[in-house]
Image 1 (cartoon, rainbow, N blue to C red):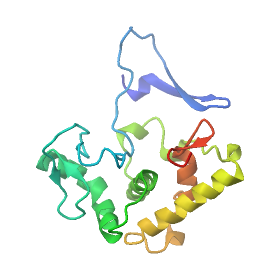
Image 2 (image 1 turned 135 degrees about the vertical axis):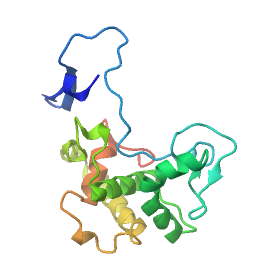
Image 3 (image 1 turned 135 degrees about the horizontal axis):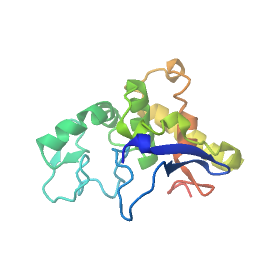
Image 4 (image 1 turned 30 degrees about the horizontal axis):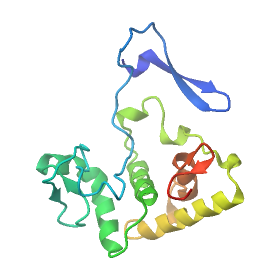
Length: 190
């Protein structure tokens, strides 16, 4: 179904929702798009292709960061735009490794900086996501502030001064938009 056949609507207390503008057949695909950003969990690294997410025992490692692994040259080439800056950040912090949430936030920041709208943003943009900040305890906010500081250190090779970033790219706000589920920060913070 094309995005034009879907509409966004406010869902009080829940953010926004999507609904169809026409009658649907059972089992009909409503919408398909690439995710805005994703990362493999640390446990999944090495056994799953970073691009197509297929399990494979014979993956090829990125020669630069030695972290990302791909099915082959095709997947590696397709992933390069998203991986290029992350690659430099990963290399700069060796032997340390950032938490999954920090890697994901980094990919979000790079995508926002490129201002490249992907198909998944035709209905929603990252800025449309609800932050849930008002539902967070001070302890949870402190945890997210710590993650934002960790993100700043992780991105230092690519972003020397976070204060020069556009206002839409606020590290703390990024975490409040994707880490909170049912009032609880994304694991392992909970």
